[in-house]
Length: 189
Image (cartoon, rainbow, N blue to C red; front, side, top):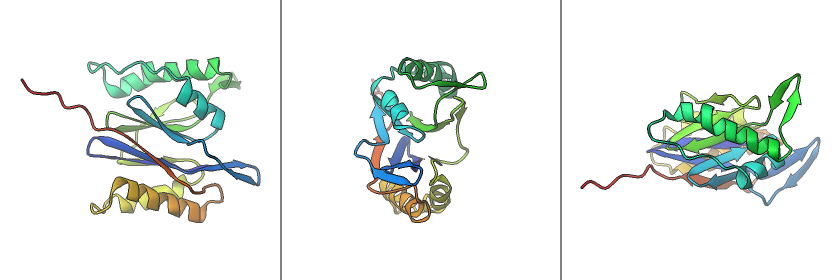
């Protein structure tokens, strides 16, 4: 199920997700969004609606300190907070002596990270990424659409998700859009 797609542009992360809930051959359209903001972080999930609800309503992500490299923060501060959140919410599970969660995208401070079910943090070389069963279609569309400077980020993401919906039975409208804002510019004295 799902297609979550995101792009980074001019210091902001733009993310969009579909509304499909899929179980086997059953499809439902959900009102609860798969893309949401938690403070200055934007997230979009696949894998489980329960996991997404825990991330949206229970995650207490410590603030990133500007002296710490952002990737280091994601690995050493953000992920332990996610693991604690999922454990306390009864979602994290042990498989083959390995703790497992789910897959989701995180946008923070103009950068985009993919969190995998084994909690490793990835950051694409490209200014876009996608997760879910519709990801291959969205990634193909994004690789072309992102070059068109006349399009807005929301339009780029909408067109990418429309392609995912066209070719994947697990992706459906309506689509939901969120943005993690531009970095704060400190006033000069």
